Amino acid sequence: MSDTETTQPSTLESKSGTSILEPKSGTSRDFFIGRQPILNIEQNLAGYELLFRSGRENFADVEDDLGASAVVIWQAFADLGIETALGPYKGFINCDKSILVSEVLNVLPAEKIVLEILEKEKINPDLVDLCQYLKSRGFTLALDDFTQYQDKYIPLLGLVDYVKVDITRLDESNLEKTTQTLSRWSHLKLVAEKVESLEQAKYCRDLGYSLFQGYYFARPTILTGRKLGHSEMALIRLLGLVLEDADTRKLEELFKHEPGLALNLMRLTNSAATGIQQRITSLRHAITVLGRRQLQRWLQLLLYTNPAGDSVTSPLLQLAATRGRLMELFAGHLQQGNQSFEDHAFMTGIMSLMPTLMNTSMDMFLNSIALVPDVRSALEAHNGKLGIMLSLTEALESSDGLLCHDLAAKLPGLTSNIINTCLAQAMSWASSIGVETEVSG
Image (cartoon, rainbow, N blue to C red; front, side):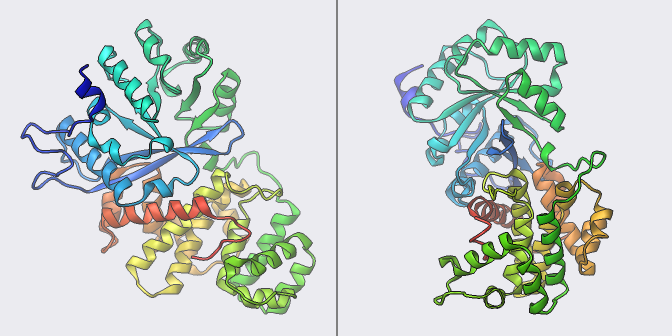
């Protein structure tokens, strides 16, 4: 590889000679940003794989698809602020060689990005030199979709930091053999992709994997079930009273029987985040100052924390908070100034993961709490405008671009660009929340 090639990322060009960052006339930019969480061995959030999916089937060849993906990657980081949205977590991005030598890399924060080298790439001295150059620029590298070891991988295995293994493409024997071979490179972090259950995650952990990609943590284990703890029951009761617009005296009485919650409430309302200039000295005063809307939001988020209060890296909290905030932002675009609709949208997003938290069915959960009809209908059967918004939110999580396009068409005013902007804002909010002190919208 020449010096020019290794030190000067080139402009990606189409057959017509135009930069792929300058969309051709008539080329759809109807792309959606998806993300898949990556958890560490403690089952806490460690990063996201960022995915870019077309909402239309009009990219007939690899070049067009690559061009559109490059445009979206550029927009995501230059315009939408995905870097901020990642918070403290790493962002993993699929890149073929054309993107690896393009100006797209100029907008990527090297210290936060893991560039995934695709399985299809031909391993030769040029690719090895390129990887060395990218490492010198501060990027972290990964081998994606690794399945079977071959000696040709040796030069790259010494350079990359992660190897991602699609566990659905290997039986147990081959998975164990591949993992054992990779263990020869002690610096490698092994990522198990497409993990569908907690049992699979535990199996891969025992083999030597330290990172796990998938939404297995968001699926309720209904058969095992579990009894809600005392603090969780108290939260449910408090939330029920708030939803019923109960008298402040009833809320105060319940808080008095929950010293931990009462202390957190006092801390919350006395924090600088509330903007209150006076000190809060009583529970009644705290409830009044915080307001029912903020109290409701705080209780909803608090449900997803563990008793120790370690909520920042909880993947379920992050997912629930992102869902709630994303749906609230959608609602703001669909019905500007309708605070009630925004509140119902936030509630729908947050509550959609309660069956997972409680290890129960949605029906059983809905029977345990009073919800307004439109929220209940959305959670129960994805009905109504809130139901469509919830379906869109879930489609973004599964990176189904065509479904996102179809659902957005049912919500006039939500373009793909607005949806991606809302997602970036929701991820940023979710990654920065501290449940005890930041509940404002």
